[in-house]
Structure formats: C-alpha cells, structure tokens
Image 1 (cartoon, rainbow, N blue to C red):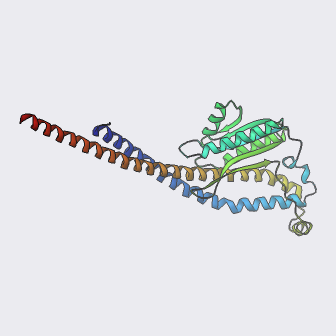
Image 2 (image 1 turned 90 degrees about the vertical axis):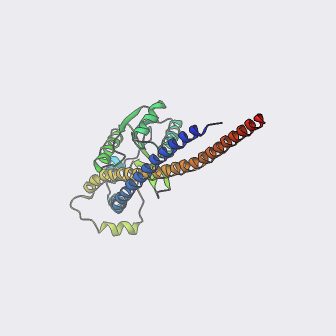
Image 3 (image 1 turned 135 degrees about the horizontal axis):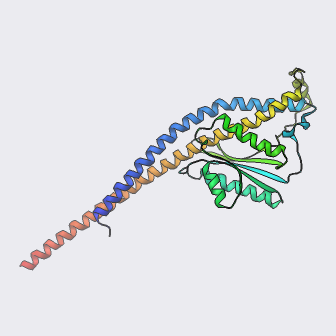
Length: 291
C-alpha cells in the first residue's frame, strides 16, 4: 500500500498537470474565437466566388478548353492531407491520416499512382513513418494560415494537374461545425467540379456578363483563384477544428485530473486512517504488555 507521502506527491504532480491542461484549454479557446471570426468573414466570399465560377463556366462555350476543367482518364491521384503542426488535440490528426490512407488505398486498388501532399508536421511525420513518399510538405502554417500559403499549395496542385502527373486531386480535412464537433471532409479539388445549370438559368446569366473581356478569359482567371480560395477555406476550417478539438481534449484532461485528485485524496485519507489505527493498536498492545 502506498504511503501518505507517495500519494501526496502524486496529487501534487496531477495538480500541476491539471494547471497546464487548463491553461492550454484557455489558449485554445482564445485562438478558436479568432479562427471562427476568420471563417465567418471568408465564407460569403468563397460561396459567391464558387457560384460566379460555375455561372461563367456554364455560359462559356470554350469552358472545356480550360486546363483546370479538363477531365481525363485517372491514372494518378494527388491526396492533400490537412493536419496540424502540434498534437494534444484528441483524434484531430489521426482521423485525417486514417481517412487519407483509406483514400490512397482505394485509389491504388484501382491501379492508380498516388502522390502525397501534406500540410502540418503531424501529417508529414505520420505518413513518412508509414513509408509514404511525400511530393510536397507545408509546415508552420496551420496555427494561423495566410492566403499566400493557400496560393502556394494551389499553385503546386495545379502544376501537378496541368502537367499531367495527376488526373485527380483529393483534399482531406476537418470541417469546423462547432467547438465540440468537427466533420471529416473528402473533397475533389481538381478537376474543378462543374454544376449543370438549367437552360433558363443559363439564359439569365448570359445577360449578366459583358463580352469584353472575353468570358473564356474571365474563366481562365477565375479558376486558379477558385482553387486558392477552396484550399484557403479548408485551411481556416482545419485550424478552427484543431483549436476546438484541442480545447475539448484539454477540458476533458483537466476534468480527469480533478477526478483523479479526488480519488487520490480519498486514498490518502484512508492511508492516514489506517496509519492512525495501526498506531493506536501499537499503543494498546504496548499498554497490555506492561500490565
């Protein structure tokens, strides 16, 4: 049975750990609020850009001549996995890695070559540990991603696609729903998905655009921006999800530390009671021996 001193040391250790997890919970909550504000500011712009891109593509007869819209037989697939640079965020990183590996296994099962692009140190290190060769790795950007980071990633995936090294680009990330909920998403980035509009909608849209500059030229400028914004939005969603997941994990850790302290305190009280009882028995035994 552990002594009072041993249990007291464990209580101090757990209490110190609880202070750390509580501080990490508060930091994550603060960062989550900032990340949420950035997402809310971007979502209307991203939604409108997607709508505009689809509308222009729908009324442009030369849409299919655009490299980023070109559909071809899939022989190579790029998997873009968005993880974090740090851990201690529950299943946040593990879920993305697990889904990404499942996507890669499915593509390889169809005889396709897989190219990896990893965002975040956790994703890169986990994939390398599993023997995956990474085409491009991006670290140091997950805590507060910038638009330039998304542009660099978009430029790389577009380069792979246009050069014909890959025929499909799939992105796996955590979409932010709330501080307690993150939804794992698998999105096809390239070729840019097209939505089929009805004839009436196309007719209405056609009157909304001028002939100068040429609509195919507008589309050629919109498509790279569309890819950048889609990736930037996913980066922001992933960052908010990371902070939400870490806040929840650290909150649970703090609660577990508190419960463990209560349990250890009870154990220490029992040890103290047993020690006092033993001392009383020794005094009684000594008194009996003197009679």
